[in-house]
Image (cartoon, rainbow, N blue to C red):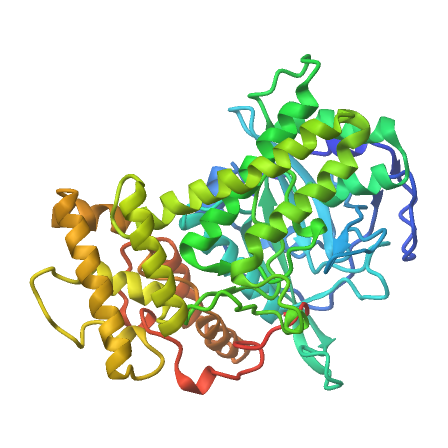
Length: 513
């Protein structure tokens, strides 16, 4: 690996604590502090994402690179640091949060001018660990590694994963917070993104009335990640808010297209550049249920359920607007932009759902069909991914009643079968009215609907095998996530088996997942 060109401009630009003080504490007015990663007894290489490494000009993995991948014995040009941010968690102001398990290695600048940050997750405690140990377990590390790569190949903006290593030590975690902590193997991943800046970074400085640093941070964000905004424009901060509002809405539409449920959409988990970040208690929608949340901590109110994600994204944008108000200073503008979020989101959601059904454009007749489809999905709760796979292969002229059976987690009664039949009749009629051929329909559907999604039960089985030293399923899943729209591995294209219905770490997850 070529590590000589890793830079650390972030430390040079912003007010930072350079003390390397290991204590967990508040660092008001600072955005980052230098830290020392933990010393691990026996780190062990697991996996290196070679395609991503070459895109980042890091080159191939060699055995001596293990130290860097596990954050051990680092070269002198790398000064690890973690950042402070604040945020609203489950709707409540939480004050200072920060990178409790994340430590930055620095920034790579490519020949095309693009920059990417490298960050270890699970490499030890930071001042922001809040009584935690800063470690990560193999279970959560594998989940984030594979899911972030899966999202990338689904065409959804996301952080990505470069490497996965065991640390050689055990870490104690209580996965369901029910008083049953267990020792699990520790692990470290390296993840990368253009930026890991969050809504919470702006909230941190705004809450302290550190307006000059807030301005400096937003200028940095615009200059580095929003080339479409003229940095010398008077209204550049308004332009940023307009763009991030639309990027956030687009991101939620993309999540809903594939059935991704984040599980913990706190403001500190919202990207300032519109990425999917922080893969904790996520899940892919299986049986269709707008109230589905994969996070057991969220179950009482289901604040972050599948059907609530758009509304919560808007709520989080309100909090970002509050944080940026000292720079924008125009309440009417911010209110109008936040109100326009609804219309924009609904328009994009309708377009996305129309594409999932094979239509190119939206009109009143398609909206009527979408309304019927929505009612059917809510009532019958078919498997979200399998339903569209079966719909794509369904032929107009057939009356095969069993074609959709693999989609359902229960047997349909006669009335429920009639609902499916009525939908198919309306669907076929509209396709004919629009003169959409089978080839056109299937091409649009195949571009929009993945055949394969990374279900939690597959991750669970993969992790169980990895604990026993078996990498076969990991490699199988890694191959499948690279081509989700044309995956042909039938062993992976199945609905969740009954044995996993109430499996901790599979169907029941927490923020420790």
